[in-house]
Length: 213
Image 1 (tube, one colour):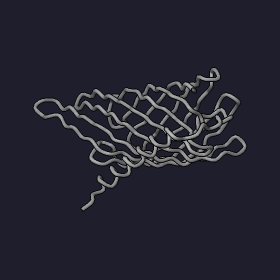
Image 2 (tube, rainbow, N blue to C red; image 1 turned 135 degrees about the vertical axis):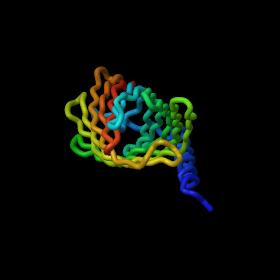
Image 3 (cartoon, rainbow, N blue to C red; image 1 turned 180 degrees about the vertical axis):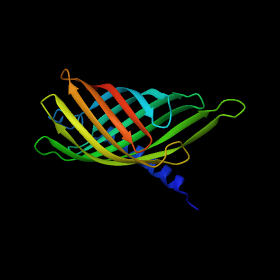
Image 4 (spheres, one colour; image 1 turned 60 degrees about the vertical axis):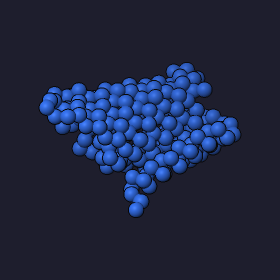
């Protein structure tokens, strides 16, 4: 019998293969002329702080990411993220690798888009003695929809509603809202900040930089 985990695993491997193959054979795409990040080729890094609503302590971490347009309406991306929470009762370490795609259109400075991602996450929970540590891992998937808006020739805002879930990991089904702002300080370097709000769970703040190439 094929389980949900196996189905998601096959889909994740399929998307990863598609992303890798498309990256290798995709023809050069003309750079988007908007001030946003969608449609741009870049690498980036973020510092992350996560405020858990039911805990007194915050989590900290970071992420590395890359974005590659493969057509005038499709981007693919990859992200590795790491978060550490040191709490009086439980320590939680989370890391994940995800690949994703964005399909978008553009009109009058607006870019409505849909997104999808698949990945794999590793979680480790450390409890006080005499309890034993617990390790969990599993597939992560998400879908979303939103819009990116150019505010000036160097600044853009983005908003996205998304749904995420996971199998055999600490990632649970949830709805979230992310609001962000990016600004190009030079032709190749942009700064970005965002807040990601998950229903009844946490608020994540991200600040980082993007390097176009």
